[in-house]
Length: 119
Image 1 (cartoon, rainbow, N blue to C red):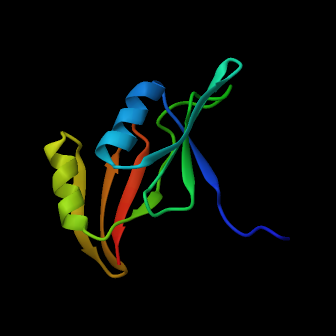
Image 2 (tube, one colour; image 1 turned 30 degrees about the vertical axis):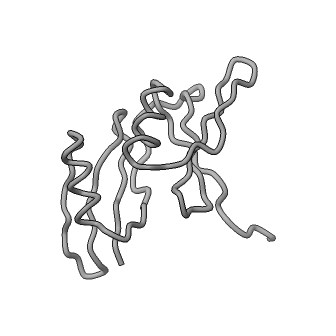
Image 3 (cartoon, rainbow, N blue to C red; image 1 turned 90 degrees about the vertical axis):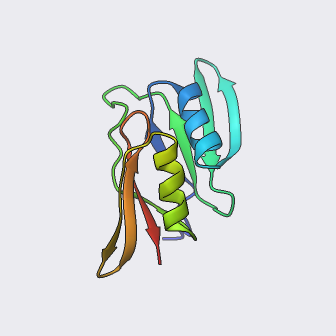
């Protein structure tokens, strides 16, 4: 096997414009790609210092928006990020001190679940 990295994870969303605003404007992700290809729109965002991207895509047949869980995002300032999310009206559980470190959880507007982690 010659796999070297995870390039892109697909997260299914019901409204790509709303998702773009959440990920780019609130989370501060950069838009790597936003283009229409046939009947599909390829919308890919990436954290400013990240290599792996998230494709914000309409659900494929048999899939539903809001079904992703446990995607871990790394932060250098967990407390500030939790406060910013809360101030923006996002429900945040945490920060919590756990045996492996500090973390908090939140969901995007479709209910896709994320773990915000600090080392």
